[in-house]
Image (cartoon, rainbow, N blue to C red):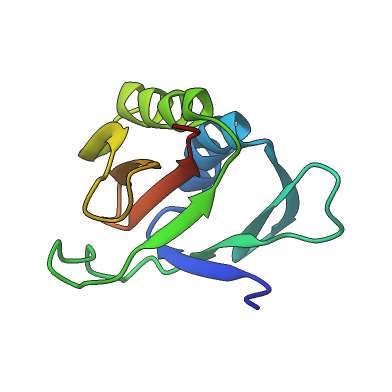
Length: 128
């Protein structure tokens, strides 16, 4: 089982503000703020599960890196709310909300690229 994940960001303040807004759709809240890192955890959980680490000299993550982080949520509405908030705040779409039948017939997901090129997926499994 994975305890937490972290991604590098070039501007911690900007990325923390961005993720604070978009992760709210998934019931995450900002839990930890330190000079070089910010941690988000789901309400009701005991610890931060998703971390941003300041990497000011980092190059933008290339689109073909093959790496992405997937966060699970409970509803298709939450997937859409996350995606819509991210796009509204300036992230790039990398797959609009919808069923991904090549994964499974009830796999409903969306993909974004944050300001640093990190690919973030949000998924739920819908009843058929």
